[in-house]
Length: 325
Image (cartoon, rainbow, N blue to C red; front, side, top):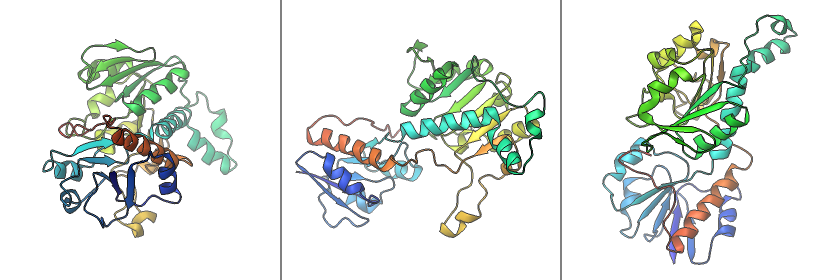
């Protein structure tokens, strides 16, 4: 019997959905407290030291989203025998939000909407207007994983030329959608790119990866979409480039400030600069993975991993703790 414990109790019918997709031979418990010391697999993004140390038979941690929290990465250094895996169930909804932000930023949908709500049609008659045609432009996707590959296909469907970077790439490669380059080729790719789409995890290598020089080297007109992590882009450089118009527009789903508790959720600005005052920024409250089907997608993909484990097969989506993703 394979024993699995889920630290965060699934919402609604989540546990029932999971059970329906599991093979025989898997026992599942859930909740903050592990009442039995026998789980072989723990499901949770931020386990405590006590939860990891409670059972010597624990061999796998499944993080129920894409990414590796810094605190969890630090803790896992003391548990080298535990294999860590992600779920990529959110690839489709995140890619769809990425496309939404790209289109909204390129066509200035939000300020036009706000003006028309006031009865103001004047933006329609301003020539030239601020809209950017995406067809024929070049998109650069940073991070060619599960999300980045979906984003690339969506950009290709818009008749864009697509470039991409992947850290594990050693030489340029075509896959029928994008031309994929090593991450070290970034500085050569930026001047070719009108739309920079950031789908990277936050690591010591990616923090501050995009600064003033990188933004200035983009082709014109330039767009930036970030659904990775806020700190990958230097905040001050991003604000300055948007305020000056050097960067035509941006769509941001990840930020620099987050509410610290439930009470602050109604009054926390997402940046240390007034991004909310700029008309050329689309603001989204880190909701890329959310959809009406996300819970079902999460539970069915979790079932796929657990079924692989009970069959004795290697689990997919393994996280390299040293790299941080």
